[in-house]
Length: 453
Image (tube, rainbow, N blue to C red):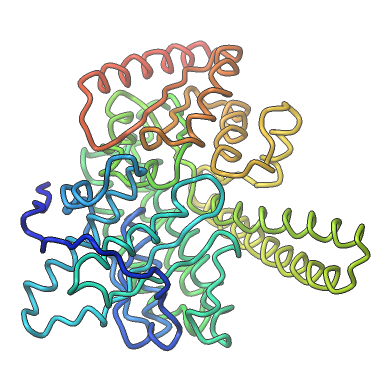
């Protein structure tokens, strides 16, 4: 896939203007919301949910503007920052060429969530704001930034009366996207005819996209779930029951890289090529973790307020605690209910429970959830995968990613102890000649373990 050359884009100036302009609820219904493509299915279902609530949302093409993304970064940034920056520059450049003099940068809002803690993800929207500001004609493009700090609440971007409904529908779109991904990974290694699984899943994505656009704002979730159940039933006919079971490989790591098929060079398909059935950690796991972490923070703050005898603090943090506890209960109950329905039709893999992952981490004295980042989920998730009988683990992450490097350092001796094959797979956009050999060797080891079982 060709990337846009830096020369295709206007030359930027070196004077940066202030960062503080963010999209508000008055902006968002009058403009086009641009969604970066991390997970293809999940992104399209989320965009459909936005459209159901009257917001014109579009998933941008991805990886076409990588050269531009790299040109306007120093190389010290996390690789997803370069990819997403290239995506928005590519999209805007195409719009300028399509519309000519009718192009209005004020019409676009770039949707880019963030995270707190040491992960560089928290700085993407700030850095990319500077880059957009360095183009005089792009300074009016706004960035809608949602934060991990408040569990990705949407206050400020939508009218308060619809925020709760949208969050429920948006969460459902994440879970359905995860299930369609897991459906693909379940049927593709066992398909009756080579190549029939991908078009089926593409069709399924569009069916569910239409279902979310029609039913999300009216909260008719049962109609959405029935469509999903019908698709799962149809998918059963793709599987050839005579194909023997294959080694089961679990993927953990940084959420963007392990999900973005271009950035990770389609690592799941590569593993399948050498005989694997793969299960990737889900997007829903991260959403649940963000709420779980806010709940833990509210508990800590409440204990501190009680020790200080601060009535104001006690009321505030007690309200926060109740709010996040209700959110987490709703999310996990909804997720488990949907997975339970689907698993009665087809044996796709269930998702992890965040509280159980923290117990695993504590019980094995591996890593404290107080430290945060995806290392919490990756380290304990690997142990959970091993307990569930997986035959190998792959850790996918951007080159130099701190949480995933921590994961690798902690987990390698444990994997040696359990005698489970393990592979680190860092990516930075370059093609490494030894990658294929490493995957083949890893899969040989996983197959040996599988045979012994």
